[in-house]
Image 1 (cartoon, helix red, strand yellow):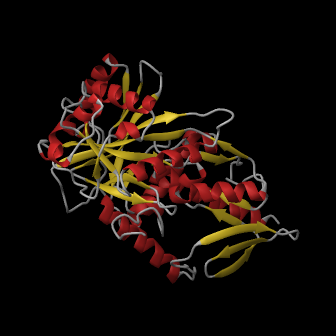
Image 2 (tube, rainbow, N blue to C red):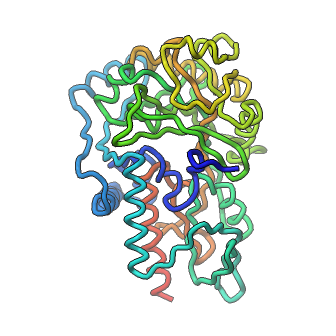
Image 3 (spheres, rainbow, N blue to C red):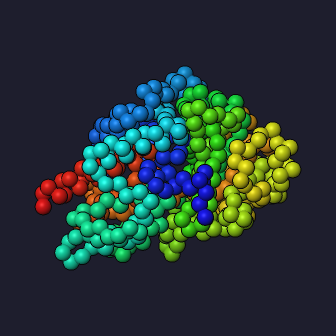
Length: 411
């Protein structure tokens, strides 16, 4: 059963609508747009174009510029612990602002004559011998010469099933498995003063796994996600008006699988199912002190913490029972190294929520127009494994739309 605060993966705008609303203004953050289009300058043009559209539809005009002096200082500290901080220009809409921008875009499209089918599930896509696609929905059947599949993170598993059925070439990429970390606002301030949403990347000493910060929310809130299959997860939000005394961020471990278990979505889902059972349908929460010592947290122990959790609908427990041992070790090591850049991150009182899993790891083979190996079938966004953020997701939508126009006009 969905609840209003946690039903945030679906609907118009997808997961991005109710995220922190941060637009990273470079093509290699939030995806690899420059590789998709084959040229850095063209990718940058696309990023600038989608940014301009967001502003036209209500995004704030101000941009967070990286603080060059602080970046230089932090880069030196990061080098000592074999980490890297990525300087990024960013535009912050906020969760409340994102909703308004999406509403404005939707109203513009409807005024232009576009039919928007609210509350409608896409169930199945078929292609007939006549070359036409049939899209079965919860409200009837649609026919089209070209179809764009962009189901978002919540629809990644569904997309894989449709691509396999249609015979499209598909590769499984890595999967990001990790936690959401919550600390007092002042702890992350050395990083968030330099870059609003800092991207810190490191590789662990024991396993050489990539670990990274993602979706940092200064004075933000941890939120619960619910997927269509009933599994749960966590995410973070920030608002332009409402503020907390904490900062939260995702801390993700990138894992690659090889034969015979190449399906990274199913691997991630198996972890989510276990975590959901352990938490009784709620995310798990644990103090870092307890995680390091292999003991479960209790509400009594959490109440003794100097941090008050912003998400209360959680179950105190032992995250190491839900996440793979390798991932837990990577997270603990990574937080200790991150503590060199933001002292206090690895405090015993730091709160850890689980699971945070990013389901955008299945990627169809596409051309420069984002058409799959099935003629007339186009894909875009996080659900297709082509992006990891609002900026590149929007840009892939533009690429696919232009590709569809070219496909239809030359036939």
